[in-house]
Amino acid sequence: MEYQDLELKKLVYLYIINYSRIKADEAIMVVNVFIRDIRTGSPIIKALGVRTIGYLKVEKLNEYLIEPLK
Image 1 (cartoon, one colour):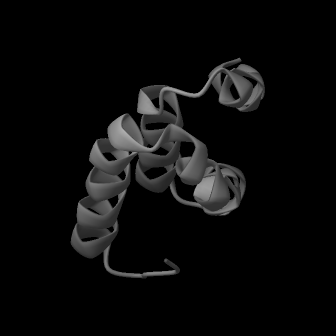
Image 2 (cartoon, rainbow, N blue to C red):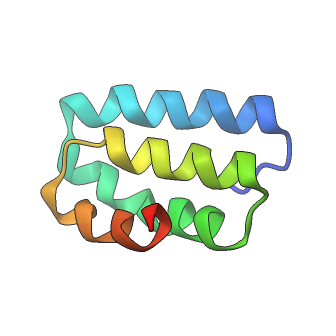
């Protein structure tokens, strides 16, 4: 999932959002990629990571959104 192409990254993230609606527990396995993008990416990549984590229907992920949203 370490794609440098922004358009490809957007497509993969959208796929994960849609897939998480079916199997939310399996979506947790890729959270580290989103966290890495939020911490080290450009502003667009950070926003994409925050948006993606926000869309995932897993309550455990809410704690990851606190710091970036401040």
